[in-house]
Amino acid sequence: MATKVKLHVFVNRKKIDLDVEQITREELMEKAGFPSAGHDLFRLQGEGDPAGGELIPVGTTLSLKNGERFRIIPGNLTFGA
Image (cartoon, rainbow, N blue to C red):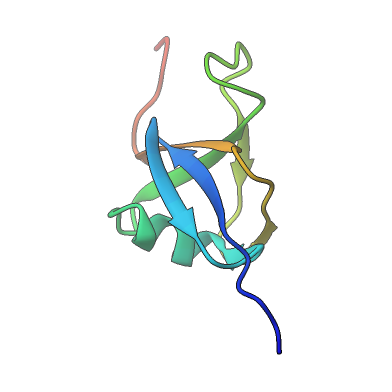
């Protein structure tokens, strides 16, 4: 009998508990309470990532690690413009 994986990630500093190690970009955004349409998801190298994170393309399946951090922002924002 398979045991459920229990891990957590942080999305916009909010802890999200999951029972899977792989999840689609869209499923993660939904669990975090954001619509995937019109928003971008970034994988961070840690809180305060100076690079701003790696953009996760639509349709991507993510292999998660416990404690990973992500940021969701509206897709129409430009920074520094």
